[in-house]
Amino acid sequence: MKQKPALVLTAISGGVCGFFLRLYRNSTGYEPGTGLPKDGPFWPLLLLFALAGAALFLLLRSTPKDSMPCRFCTRFATSGDLVPALLITGDFLLAASGVWTVAAALRDSYSDSAAMVSGVLTVLCAAALFFVISGSIRQVDIPPNLLLAPVGYYVIQLILKYRSYSVNPVVEHYYVEILALALLLLTFYKLSAFAFVCAQIRHLALCAAMAVVFCLTALADCPGITSEALFYFAGAVLSLSILLLCRPEGFSPPGRRLSRSVHHEEDSTDV
Image 1: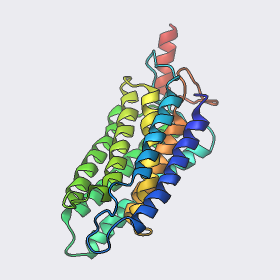
Image 2: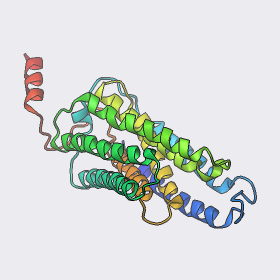
Image 3: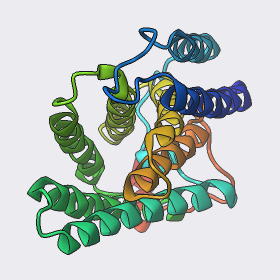
Image 4: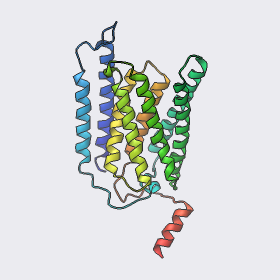
């Protein structure tokens, strides 16, 4: 994908611009007493999302469709130091957000049980992702069903978040977080499809890039360094890592090492 630098730059710059626009809106756009928007929807932020989506779509339009199946460990094998470091950092931040949520729920005797469930599931999801990342770094096969764990996790998170946000009559207060969660769900759903050899790389790249935009924007709604801020920052880092791993069909990373089972499969194919 020759347009990858442009994709990464567009995603990060869109997220940074969205963060400052959302921060400005939160500080000046609502009535102090009621929390209602002063002047209706904040069109600059909506326009930014539309322009970012259109730019990413146009950049990916020329990406050819995948025409043949490919092993997950081959397609998403890491090379170099940057992507493995980003993957491990994102997974560590996700686990830290889960531990923080569990600790806060244990300290507060009046906390909702949903917070405890959310924190425990976050830690478990980070553990599952660790094995996926380890397989990508070591370039060995992983159980395909392991990639379904983050998909199920983000489905549950989306339900829990919407359940807590829906009591707020002002949708503008929480639509960015809901869309960020939806895009993280789509990103890991498209990623997991590669383990079952039924996906397209440009669909994954588009979802991952938009997830970076919305996760960075959602950080503006977090009051300082909290478990929620760690959660969305982890989502941005993981989505950016996945975007960097998106490669054209037939790409083989340098120094590729395969597991013994993969060698056996290739030898039997040659025979």
